[in-house]
Length: 189
Image (tube, rainbow, N blue to C red; front, side):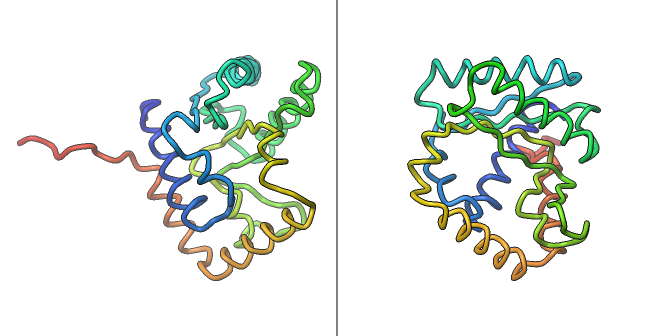
């Protein structure tokens, strides 16, 4: 796949899953032209971390960008366990770089599994994406949209209810379809 295909599929996931099912009630506020910056990161963990630092700086220098989605095309994030290792290092590096309290990472992966949930639990689909992602979020935006701790619990409960109503087959088919590049125009004969 081309980088443009990864980006298009990821933005379709944002539109068709995250926003359409209201999994993140403030995602629609960032979905304006230029509001979500997508970066495709190839390479190993070191390359991903270098790109993460660059994306922090991009957000520092571009207040019009609401958030960054890093699409990780790397063998280092292919399995969920290896992805969690990269995520943990990324979170530590945010702190080491002085970004604690400024940015945080949200995590999405095709095989996402919440601790304590069965692998086939529909709840996992609330954090499953077509590709491994690191979502770099401004903490000030989180504070703006989540006025208190109850908001996070309400979002979580809503997401589980939505996921249960739709079921695993729906999400599995949707994510698989999103991984297939879309043709912009019909082929010429």
